[in-house]
Image (tube, rainbow, N blue to C red; front, side):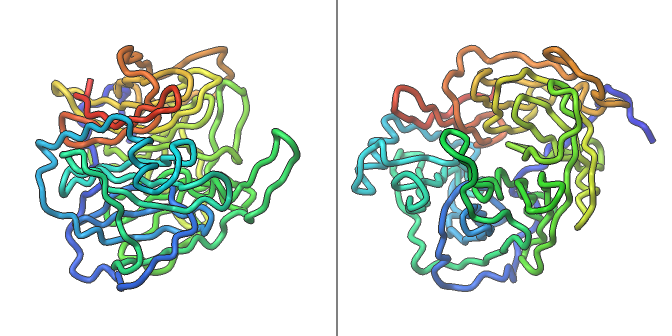
Length: 365
């Protein structure tokens, strides 16, 4: 049945939805992360960490299950300096790759690189409501590993400013929904853009689905550009992935279509402006209406409505600028590079400007 463009009901699927697992397959030891990138939380304080260099997802039991996320507020100024001092280095040798709020406690976790380049050391930090920064020690934790079977080769190609390593984009974003970790990134397949659903507890990891989209700003079909950030939401009873790409198409992909080996054509539901890279996205409800909040490299923070997220037909022709679902720019949010929902009314954001960084709790706009 074709649904109308007006959405009567959207249930936002929380990252930590699903039951607590009595047998989650975690065993005690040292994970041996080669890198630490995207983060997301699953049930009962389990943190999923993307290791792009190792082409793997780690599930780590943080043991952090006490607290009240509904009243949490996390605010830390001079974050880069404080993290650098804690790690015994300088602020310019610290890179914060992602943030994730733990819905079981309200504490915020950071994935950090100590150093720059391929030899940077991965670190996971926890920031409490009191502003205390703690390292999550990884020498003896309960964890499980899921290795990606078809990740790009770890190899630098190109010359000069065009050098790149596709392995660095083997995992671009993650979310936990319906007892699965949804992983976006690049594979070594012809349809390099990949979305895969990995059941948790981890067992076998499938090859995922190759994703094709129509990019209205470029006026062509694309299969090799990775999803930069995404959020799972639910239209009635049908879970969907809302994915954002560089330059900036917004695409809807049914979760049910992410079958191993499938070739999936997403529906382009918006073109939000070129020369821009989406950085992070969350979904929320306010005043009985449903919104997406997305941070961007060049176009600020967008508050995106949801009334046109399920069109009968998507964008299939070249557009000169913007089309489809509209948005408002949240003018008082500037230099936001990461964001995550802290609770139903607040988000935590990472602001990076003038070489400095801070964590700040904001009311969802």
